[in-house]
Image (cartoon, rainbow, N blue to C red; front, side):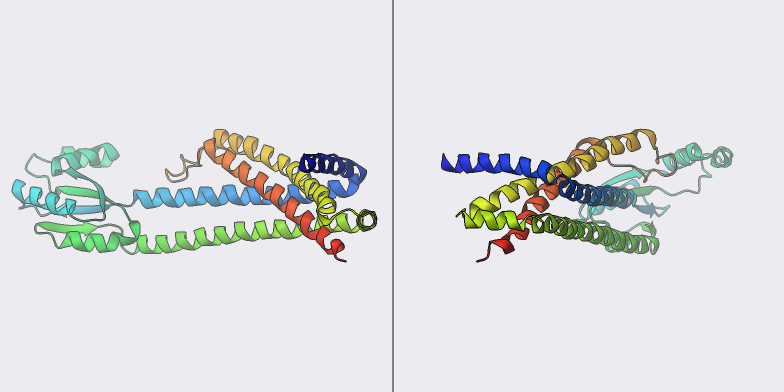
Length: 299
């Protein structure tokens, strides 16, 4: 019961202190709000770029052209050996007639050319279109497929794939570093803002010590106050994140530019980001206050 009384008193004192030191409280809240807004934008940008990278990786496929003299039995053997390769995810077989039909649907020019062919004039090859599990091993998988009997040409965009994967890897790592750096900057700025607030109230802490208050009783109201400031500071970034991202998702269509430019669906993404912002704000506020008041508790 004593602990609950202390906690209740600390919450009451924290609320009073926020309004008593209104200008400093506003400064702390503003600092938290601005830095969390930047963190929010960075997280949204980072996750969407990562999502685009994943979509690009998923779209890569190996196209296997079968030799023209391959029999039905040969094709069945090729399919069997493809199934035995560990890195194969899915595949689709098309005979040369189906390939011609696909080409006809893709372009009016191809349609006119292909319609001029006789049934026996089709120069296209039967193909397997293969998706891999691990895009990093696509070159190794293509080499394995090349060794299969009656396989002619194997293409997967060699050279371009490796370069693109390298660029995407650098971008993903860079964005992760940016987000982590911004969180650390948030901690630094908020902690320093709270230190100024605590410094202006050092006499109040000294009086509490003189009347015999324990370190725990002195520190707890400031920790609760930091929690409250962190909570208030995170509200605006959370509201802007939820409504802003929903508006962006509903009114901006990037798929017309490229099928890979797809924004992450708002649910549950924005709520996860909002929860992270709330946790950062509250934790930074609490620990910033606890760390700042600690130096004034030393005897």
